Structure formats: C-alpha cells, structure tokens
Length: 202
Image 1 (tube, rainbow, N blue to C red):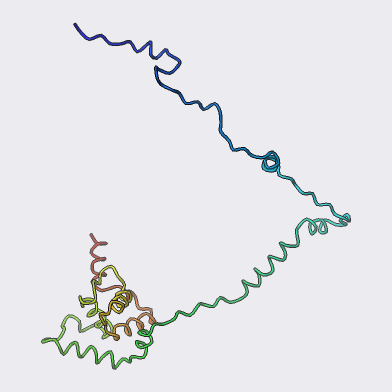
Image 2: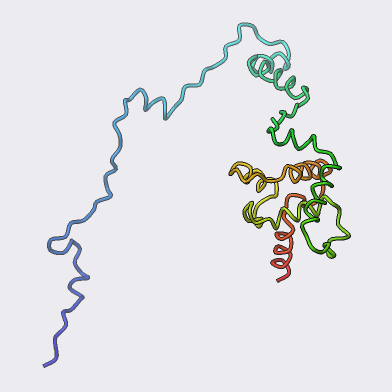
C-alpha cells in the first residue's frame, strides 16, 4: 500500500501558531522612560526671540542686530591667520645624514675605485653610467643589506643602519645629493624598476 500524505491545506488555513510554537509580537514598542520636561524640549525646542530695545531705523541696522557680534569676532582671527605665511617645520637630521652631507665627490670616486679594484675585469655594461648611479646599483645588489625589491633605497639604507650592518656612508651621501637634485626614481632600486616594467608590459 502506498504511503499516504498529510494534506497541507489544513495547516495553511490555520491562523494561530502550531502546537508548542510561540510567536513574536511587534505590536508594542519598547522605549526608555524619558522625563516629560526633556521630552518637550526634544520635540519642540524653544526659540528665543530677540527683543530690540530700540526700533531699527534702516534695513542695515536690522541686519546688524540679528547677526551676533560673536560671529564677527570669530572671522577676524581667521583672516589674520590666512595672511601669515606658512613656515615648513625643519626636519631634524640624523648623525649619519650630517656625516653624509660632508662627504665630497672625491671621496665617492675613491670609494667606487676601491670597489672596482676588487674585480678582475671592468664593468663593460655600465660604462655610460655616472659614478653616482653605479654606486647605487652596487648597493642594490649587495645582498648583505637585505632585499632591494619593494623598498626605497633610503629606507633600506636606514634599516641596515638600525640593524648594525654598517652600510656605506657614501651611498647615503649619493642618495641625499640625488634627492636634492630631484633625480627621477632615485629611491627605486634598478631591479625594482625592471620588474615593474615587466609587470606593466605583461
């Protein structure tokens, strides 16, 4: 014999809850007890009427009475503040930056010649570059100072200094000079530039 189904019509027709079920009523709202005086102030705020002692002779006098004097007093200091020239706060330089600013071009060239002397053959692929760019690129590939991709050269140098890795002061001197000259992409490592150009071209 096939199983008989219960008719759903009788369940649909029911208005009340099923057996053992309770319903939620949204008919009543729960509110906080608020004193009547406060309630009146919230619903109908009092408007203070200005009662002039003397009748204004002209429209200008009437406007002058309506506008509070406090607003005029507030506007004056703002105007004075705008007239004063804005002075940029001086950034305090670290001891390393002070030392780096004293380094001359001759010292940077000497540092680079010492690096070149360690090689068996000259760098043929960097002949057209300036000494400053050669110093920065050598710093980029010096792995003892940490990865150069995804970090600015200045931050990398400062991080190496904080970690006690003794990065060359000549590199900081070159970075400071290039920043003053507003050289393009001075803080981006050459490897980072190559990887970015590949990512854009892909």
